[in-house]
Image (cartoon, rainbow, N blue to C red; front, side, top):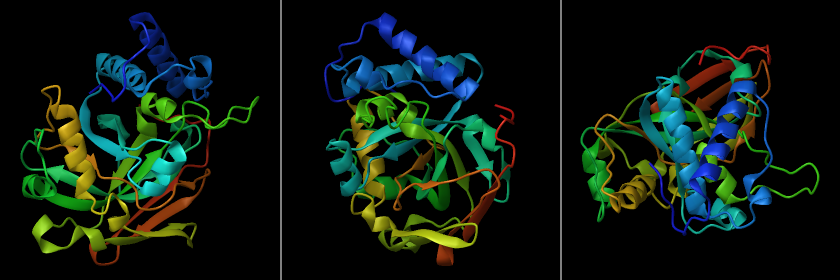
Length: 284
């Protein structure tokens, strides 16, 4: 999926070059400079074009897309980013982990974790005109999830202290790097998703708490937004896709050896441990 809300300025050659830099950064575990600092005229659409080109590189290596994530879903995060709508990225097959896994820390550069609801579609969603009701009708089930986010592009420029812009995050696959699903799957008609809450622990200490209504007032709103966004270009969300609706906590940093536990109350919990060896990049 590509395309954003502003006219692109990058040439195809620049898009390919930057996608290659991101690909190498993830492979080597070394962050790269902010694109927006190097190209001050960079637009959100340029970011999506770079992300799309990076996706094509991954697909060329045999990866498959299993779903999508939606970010910038809280008003606070949109205000910080200076962006008035969410963003999105792709979830690849090698990004999925299971409850109870030990996750190779070396697969990431500066990983952080967030709690989200994952929607698994039972039938396609095609915009425009998709509503929350359409999303709930199309959803096979919802399940607790932890998203692992990462920054292949530096969040803070070491020379200027500038924070990366939303264009950088969009290019960087909306910061997505991994997902863990667990707990108890539920159908949309069995609960009110707005009231799903979670406690996020790191090493038995509660670091964050949140409630799903903080995601655009309803966690299905992000799914509807994405279906309508890509529907403009004849694309759709497919049956079987996993869709992360957006975080309802702030990101929490993790280090080698950390145990992360997300308690979703009646929906169960998820626990994973990050491995001890930062140099072990694991199998991609």
